[in-house]
Every structure is written in structure tokens, then in C-alpha cells.
Image (cartoon, rainbow, N blue to C red; front, side):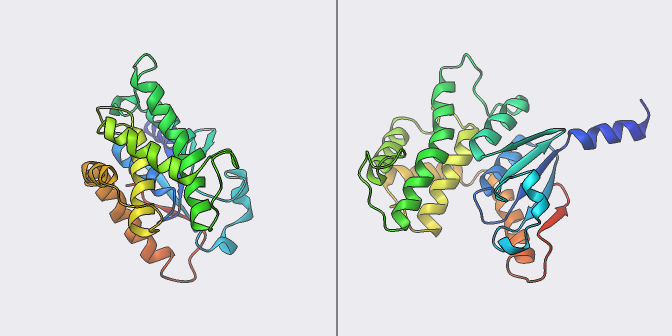
Length: 231
């Protein structure tokens, strides 16, 4: 195979990552840094939604982030993206195997972050105080108690070792506690965040986000989808 063909194949197989700094997609940025695979980062400035190109709906129908494109495949939604990437690049050891007892808790945590944690926090911030049976995602206090109980039972999201689920749960907890101020800093949450947020991959992701935010949020006139060099 000639060098040009090899390079073309590598480019086609590279993960294309659609991301907006300081958003929910930062958790996927952290995951990609943990996986250690090359990726092509494209900024979609959801902080200025009027600038996001209509053509982006072909990737993400709501013009939101995150989204990844891998060859001809497009994956959206954080839980699905995390499952796909961690399984695809399994050499990093971030996804419990199908026969690993941790797999059930791992999958549950990933979906819980999107389907329960986020909606509960959003409802709480908006001043809604639903009872547990009012909405499919349940009550805010029930969610807090459940996450606290799980992190009291095991040091990490899925059990006794760090997995891709921790990039999602820790990102959600860290943001909603320290920035959104919508979740109380319970002792179990504090101890957990101290265990995981200092990981080198997360530090790199935060540095990348800070640089991107300076260019695309703090400055005006930026294009909505911009190719960035891979990390």
C-alpha cells in the first residue's frame, strides 16, 4: 500500500469530534484524552447557536454537541458515544468486557447520567420540584441520594476501578457542584471528585477547553464549525 493511500485510510478512520468548550461535550473530550487515540476536533459554538451552520444537522439533528464521526458512522448522545468509543478502542481498558460483572453498573451509570442526572438537575435549576412519579427521570433528591449511595459503596462509578463511566459522572458532578452550584458538595461527592478530576487526561482536556473558550467564546466573529489540530 502506498504512503498516500495509507494516509488517506488513516484520515478516514480518525475520530472526528464535534465539540463546544465548557459544555456537556467536555466529558467526551476527557474520554478521548484518556483513550489516547488521534482525533480531529471540530468546534461547534453552541454558546452562539445563531452561528451554527444548518448543514450541521446532518451530523446532529438538534445542532447540539457532542457528536463523533468515525469513518461513515455518526454517533450522538454522550452515553452512546462513550460506549462506542470505549468499546472500539478497548486497548485503553476503560470499558468492562461483556462478561465482566462491572459491565451492568457501567452501562447503568452512563445512561443514568443522561436520562436521570441531567434532567433532574435541569428541573431543579428551573425551579421545578416534581414528585418522583411526575416525570420519567424522577425526583431531584432521589437522584442525589442514589449517586451518593453508589459512590459510598465503591470508589468509582462502576466499581473498584476507573472506567469511561467516570469521565461522564465526574464531569457532570464537577460542573453542577462547582460551576452551576446546583448540586450540594456531599462528602462522598467531594472524595470522588478528588480521586478522579486530577487525572492527567482531564487536566489536558481542561487546558484544551480553556484555549478553545478563549478563541471561540470570549472573542467574537469566530466561525461556528472550525477544524482544530488533533490533541
